[in-house]
Image (tube, rainbow, N blue to C red; front, side, top):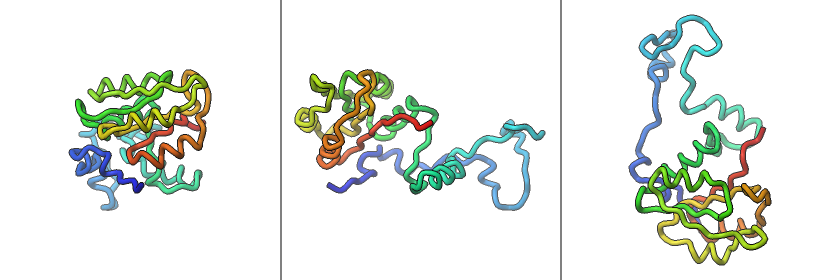
Amino acid sequence: MEFNLSKYIRPSLISLAPYQSARQEFEGDGRKMILLDANENPFESVVNRYPDPLQQQLKKEIALWKGVEEDQLYLSNGSDEFISQVIMGSCAPGKDQIMIFPPTFGMYKVAANLHGVGVQEVPLTVNFQLDIAAILGAINETTKVIFIPTPNNPTANNFDLNTIEQLLQNFSGLVVVDERSEE
């Protein structure tokens, strides 16, 4: 099943251009500017400029370090922000749903509720594993994102890789395997 990302991003968001700071608008003309209207400190200090909103240099360094492409990286200010942004970017309020597997990390449901998005809950098995038959049976046209934390919170177990692969082969939406951050 071929994955089409644009099918799972809200149409109103696809055509948006990334935020451009005043500094980016004037970059490349060779002048070093102090943008007082942006509340930038004209004196040298450790933090005196707004950061790049696209995190280009940081993504470049991480991509080199991890051996991946820059466009494979998504940086956020922690998992709560990431979860919220995935839901906000992929799900239409009052129309779409996410899928979770209780007991699980509570922030998925909180973020969905904050954005007016439905939550499909498919309980884990008695051994705290994914129930692939129940999951595939519950997926419908409103299911846009499936969240799989591994290790799971609060059960601390990992999920069977073959089950996750089976899900990936049978669901063309977004599957977020939440492996937490690397320190």
